[in-house]
Image 1 (cartoon, rainbow, N blue to C red):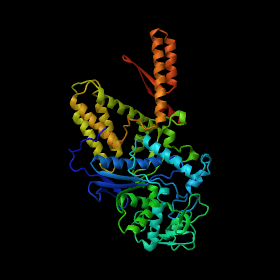
Image 2: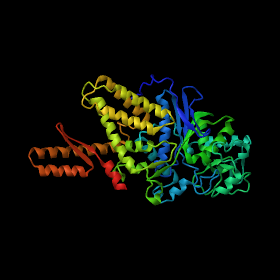
Image 3: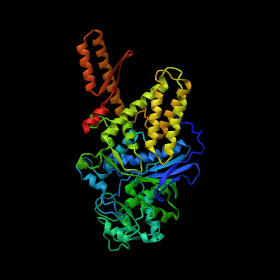
Image 4: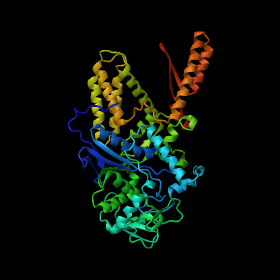
Length: 513
């Protein structure tokens, strides 16, 4: 589908909450008409969970909304495959590398090395990304493929007096950057040492808040040679470097989860602005945490949900949930409010997606008639876009979506040409802005072949059922129907013959609770 015509809206303004100023502001790109956007991606040591994807979907909605009003977007989202340590709630984190820790786990033992593990989970991330119909970034850089750029940046920071070397690494000097703490408000070194669990102990550190740009650790599994010896880059460094590499010294919007405000984004600002002497990002957008059924996600609680588990089919060990229903669930709460993911909400959104699909059928295939609802459909479309322009107000946008669907479905027995055009434009906007229409499918070719085989099996069974009914062997016909339904398929008899649809998604939810 193509973007809807928004020419009837005078100078649409996109407004977002800026963590830096703590207020909602109009987004005014540095270069008129062109939006430079960097969003922090995942550390690929496991399957990404639905909380990760809630944050990634915020970035996706920013890009979609910006494009809908005619902005050219340059969108970068990274993959972290080295340097992310477990004690990441402090600027100079300690603990084990998340990649190495995953390799030593039960799941990790099937990989020959940490590089294979990273490649596998990076590929799985891309698959889940596609399943949820998310826009692919213009560039998706990986930390391990940008070591040379990171080393050159560290050299520049040392030369400018913003960093220094010790026996254990190279540290950024917080005292050399007067604006450290501006984003998070975390400006007190005393407060930092009192409230954090663990700080890296190095007697040569000049300030407790100084954080490592390069770590010297002979035990680390992933190492590169640098002017300071063998080692690996600090976690905070990669995003600054890759944003500078692909978007320039100044970007418009930087996004991520609320857990990244400090220390990760605070450290990014310090590094990038010390390197360039310019403001790094003008707008900072952060997504709040997600809970499951009112509780924090945790593997020990059995409520740790990954996209892979929820949307994969039963043959792959998943629950077979419609990815568009999952996407709709994850965007149904406002990104700046904590979100409670529930299976009741997911069930409701499965029904909403079914009605959306029905409205698509009406807009394309309903017979000509004398309906008169174009104004109502157009109003719903404008309301949907206006909600998204107002700090991504997805609850209001979804309410407009449901109003539009309801109106279109009133035309199922006959639709006028004007109403059909309005309905198609409305659904085009839904496709462009909310991204919950994915007719092309997003699984791998292998999965498509499996789907084709499944469909062929169901059609053959329906043919046998029809022959049994024609010969008045109703017991056999009922037996075949029961067998089909046990396969997760609903059979709907009509004057034009039997139709069917998969219902494994609803069963998958019930089975997983």
